[in-house]
Amino acid sequence: MAAQKVLVYGGKGALGSTIVKFFKAKNWWVASIDLHPNDDADVNVLIDPSSSWTSQEDVINTKMAAAVAGEKLDAILCVAGGWAGGNAASKDLVKNSDLMWKQSVWSSVIAAHVAANHLKEGGALVLTGAQPALEGTAGMIGYGMAKAAVHQLVKSLAASDSGLPANAFVSAILPVTLSTPMNLKWMPDADHSKWTSLETVSELLYNWSQGKERPATGSLMQLITSDGATKYIPA
Amino acid sequence: MAAQKVLVYGGKGALGSTIVKFFKAKNWWVASIDLHPNDDADVNVLIDPSSSWTSQEDVINTKMAAAVAGEKLDAILCVAGGWAGGNAASKDLVKNSDLMWKQSVWSSVIAAHVAANHLKEGGALVLTGAQPALEGTAGMIGYGMAKAAVHQLVKSLAASDSGLPANAFVSAILPVTLSTPMNLKWMPDADHSKWTSLETVSELLYNWSQGKERPATGSLMQLITSDGATKYIPA
Figure 1 (cartoon, rainbow over the protein chains, first blue to last red):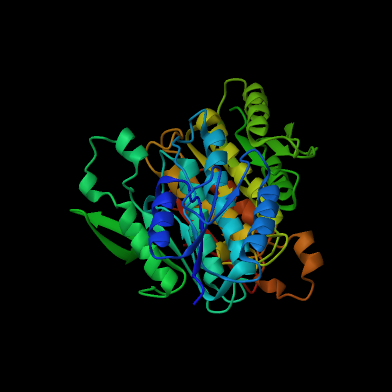
Figure 2 (figure 1 turned 90 degrees about the horizontal axis):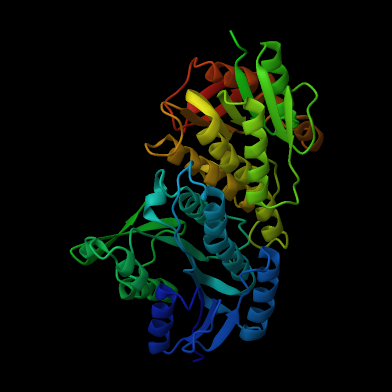
């Protein structure tokens, strides 16, 4: 049997790198899209962050078409993203809202279009939302808007006539705080027992990619961790 | 008594023009932000759609500071926006998502920042969402994402420490279909008795701007019209 295939968008980030390693350990074919190559991946598609949204999409679609060579992907996992704060009075409100949009929404929308072209029937498309963005996020306005857009995108993609392959599974993971090196650096004194480990997320996404333990398509799955144990709670 | 002051963002559009006329008929001072001037307004701030989000914000903040000359605005009404369709398979997905973001979210975020600087305590900031974007919008993905972002922005702005003046009222109107010339042109055979008139919206916004009949701050107010009568239903 040919190897199963996964595309990890943001495959060089903290979460993305962990996911790439996890799937490689299971002998999957792995493509990574990121600013920098991930040497663990079978194929790397590099993006230029200064290029436009349409240019990035063109590059990615062309390179993914060549990479899959007529075959289909079993799963597309978009874990690109970032964080920036600021309320309505912040002088950085617009700058940070722009950055959050590019990091979370450009990537998610391109992933959706790649899914329309290259995901197999019944394959999985998983995007990354944020649990706090289910409500208002006064101190991080741009972040909240971008993640709310991703949440609504999942609802659109799960509806009929979304343009995805038949029986595709679409979901978003909604972490509270992930246990990344950056979060550990900036929040050393937080309660880390409530943070979700990158391995836990990787295993969840691996199961969904295989068709195991999937919730209803369109689910926004909150990752709620307490005492180091993570529960999955649909929003 | 000095005239009360309103800023209409998108003041040359179909809805914006009706609002400008409505407030002028009540003897308010009216500023309009748009691509083209509205001759009924007291002040026009013109934006260059090819300039960046931060550039547009700079221009608008500088010109609004000069226009109000140290006084405060009673209300800021952002009715800029547009519509474009496309599902995940559409070749125009990214292009249209980009356009929708710029038309609805750039304007809404700039309006929020102007409110942080120039709205009076207890003043009103009203943005424009969309009733269909409360759920998935498979055939108009970019539109739904942009409007969902506006909805979440309202929740952020209504929370404490949002950066808005004390006791500011923040809301979004969520129309289904407005009775605009463009909609009449493109949907001549639709059931127009379910469309909401621009005068009805103008009167609602006028009442809110005066502090009358305001719902709870943070409300997403669906405009549900049937047999030509409009009900206001919080989402």
